[in-house]
Image (cartoon, rainbow, N blue to C red; front, side, top):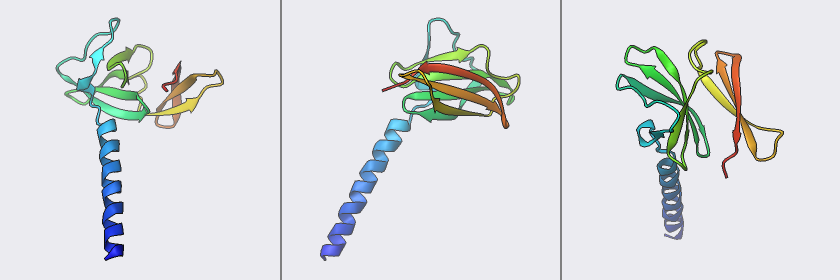
Length: 127
């Protein structure tokens, strides 16, 4: 009986932890607003999550026909997103990596098309 109660308690803690993780990461693109200096997502576009780390989300913006329309970075704290003007569709970005910067308090986002690095930006690290 004691073993059964221990197992139930562990399962409850695991399920509670998973629920918290899922809720924290359940940030779809439509929950973000465009920043003042960027234009909003068009009705024919949808966003595909490429990568997230902490409160930074990187999305690929795709048209109804499957064509690439750009890349956007969203901030989970502020709930705003910014389209990237220089990195996006030529060549097509298919994955992103996060790396610490040599500058204290900053991190780098590296953008790749297949295995070729096509861009890098440095942003202030989120706490």
